[in-house]
Length: 237
Image (cartoon, rainbow, N blue to C red):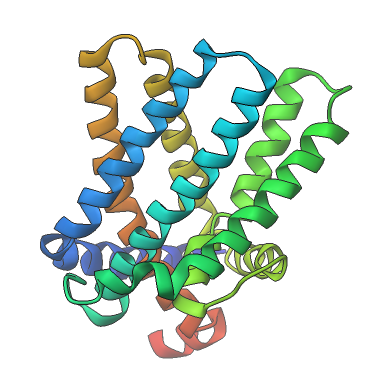
């Protein structure tokens, strides 16, 4: 157990150090994450129109907007995490590089969430939320798998589950923290959709949080995916 704790601390130190070094190159990433955070607020306005046709149309539009924004975020993260540059020269290739990968990944996760929602209708709200939260933990490596490993389709769920299972302590702890705090901030944006000043504060908090933590997750994923626990243990001597 002590070996696992030592491994957790050393991997965390590596990811944190790499993230801090690369933060100054994350301004393009930050811009797109701010846009995504603002988009979370815009989605909250949909509740004003309750017609089925409008809701269906809005959901479809939101789906493609989210995919497009994620393409730019994935390209920015790839440039910073893998190549240690801002991504300014490659940002124009975001759609062509990642649209299909992101669309297939998001679609598969959406379908699974829909299935889980339908299957858990008879359960208490608290238990349903817990199951959905666990599913988000299982799929917490999906973005890293997209922009680092080019995984797509339903295989991304299995690959993410395998990665989380194999790194349950080192990755799992941060996945829980990231998912919980991001969820709280997104909920606050939705609750303050009619209070622009409060909403702006939570949008900025979410953008700052996601910028730092997505970089941290990317650096951590790259290190964990490249070196197994046995290899890391051997490297420590």
